[in-house]
Amino acid sequence: AISGWMEDSALELIPFVQKYLEAGISYVICTDIGKDGMLQGPSFDLYQQIIAETKIIKLIASGGISTFEELPKLAEIGCEGVIIGKAIYENRISLKQLENYILNDD
Image 1 (spheres, helix red, strand yellow):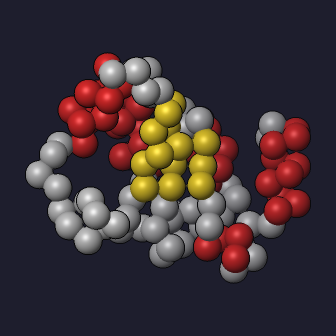
Image 2: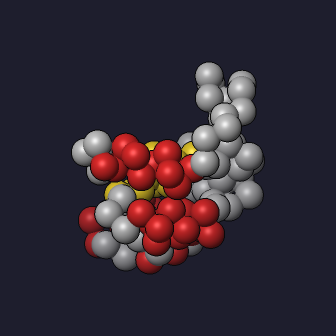
């Protein structure tokens, strides 16, 4: 989607990302707009596919994060970072949990 998620794009995701990787970017934020703000869990399969097919990408996952337990799973599949929103606002994930996770790497 483009234009603030208001319009669909005819571009295929992997070739689109690959083009920018070839141009020199390394980090990409990928938001599953169907899950953003829904607290339904992240798109593990989508993120894993992007990482596997592009090989060198540093992917930051966004959309659907609902529990703390999802964070290590995202790290395990190769995500470099995560954007967490509603799960913090609704106290499903605490800032203390995040602090401990970051400082202790577990």
